[in-house]
Length: 243
Ligand SMILES: [Zn+2]
View: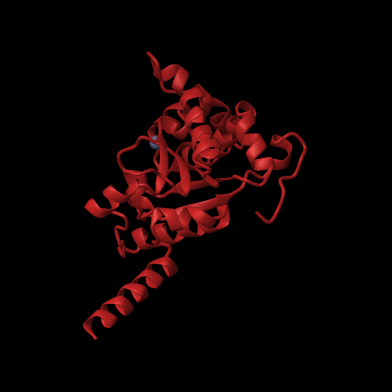
């Protein structure tokens, strides 16, 4: 009888975990779509922003399970800023997210090579380009700060975004805030311009690329959706629907 109760309890708990999007990596990878992955990201951030984190997929059992292989469900291109920790922000754990963090969440060679590996080899259906409020890299470019060393090349990708925001006549905080959003679009634009692999996967409906901005104070992520000019950026073709 005790055994029957234990079996029932474990089946119930498993169903509960699946319902909450906290299934194990293998189960998630089996059938997850970009839209399901996006839903899990949204729900995770909702838990984080409301202080209801569940800290899934932590600990020894999960380490043991994922030591056999990884099946993350989303790639995140985020900023290195210490206040924007990606697994925390989306309340995820070991083996869930494939993450690139670089100042200003720019799309350069190394970042795109990493994203291509995630999309092409790990079959990750979703790429999130995640900017954040009060981003130092975007602020430096928007305010025309002098930068030296390797930082100059790093932030050069942000210049077109800051220029668009300045052209709107914005100043100070409004300028920086707008440039942060523009920089997410710029990073996606550069991703499509420089990565034939990602263009083809998006065109084939195997990968979805969305923008988002994380608010350092509220903890909330504002979801921007796909690039408004995605069809044009992909080369004049609309991506297939219903994957
Ligand atoms: Zn930043």
